[in-house]
Structure formats: C-alpha cells, structure tokens
Amino acid sequence: MKRSRRLALIAMTQVPLLLAGCGEEEKLRQGFYTSVEACKSDGNSDEVCSKAMQAAAEAHAKESPRFGSRDECIRNYGDNCTENPQQHGVWMPLLTGFMLSQLLHSGRAPMYMGANPVYRTPDGRYNEWYRNPGGSPAAAGFRQMRAVEVAPNRAVTLSRSGFGSSGSGHSGRGG
Image (tube, helix red, strand yellow):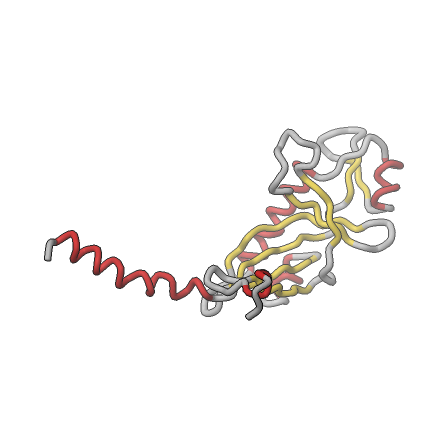
C-alpha cells in the first residue's frame, strides 16, 4: 500500500474522535446583574464578572442612547438619566447593570460570550442595549433595545442543539 493511502486511512480513523464532541448539547447562560458582587454571588468568577461589567460600561460610554434634552431622556427612562460628562447638553440613561452571556458545554468551564449594558425604563422594566449582528456601524439600527427577560441578579440557562443533534422535530418527517 502506498504511503498516501496509509495516511488517508489513518486520517479517516480519527474523524469519529473529532466528531465525538459535536453531538453535545450547547447551553447559553444569560444573567442580568446590577453589580460585579451580584454576578460573583451567582457562581461566576471575579475575572468573568469584572470583564463583563467593564465591557458593558465601555459600550454604555460609547454607544448608549443619547438625547438632546433631559426631558426627552426622562420620557424614555424616567428619573434614570444623567448628563453625559463628555458632552454638555447631551443626556443619557444611567447604566443599571449588565447582561452576561456564557456558552456552556458539559465537562468544560463556561465560555464568556459577551456583555451588554442594561437600562431601567419608567415602568420599572429593564432593556438591554445590544449589538444587532445584522446591522452595520453606519446604520441607525446597529445597536437596539430589547426587553430583559431575566430577573435582576440571577441567570437562566437556555438549551441549544449541538452540531450533531437531530433536527427531526423540525423536518416534518417525524421521529
């Protein structure tokens, strides 16, 4: 047998080992925290919580909603408004907290996915200011608001199918 065929056979025997982890179910853990301490008390590491708070604060400083008057900001965020320290006459909502997203795999540490700033609305609800992956930096819809469905200072885990999972429930063929 030629050397190239032997190498091909050896490579083919390794494929099942490479795909072994692909059938794992991935889970997305999202938490809404009002402080680094609340994040840590929910079982996250100091490093992850600090990184998430810093990322949310940076996004808030660069891209938070801006208003030309205090009254306009209050209409959208109630008394949770402050004047931008870098821009006199520009008002923005106060940063209430951050959404932490982590990807969970069985047997491995959670993987940090990112964090977004969270703001409180006049009716007491919370909105996350997130980056729309379909948008572009020049477009008005690059950053958008969406309701936060997680109670403050706790996390929820959502299941997602892994690479090797079956899609029979969506195919219409039964199974």
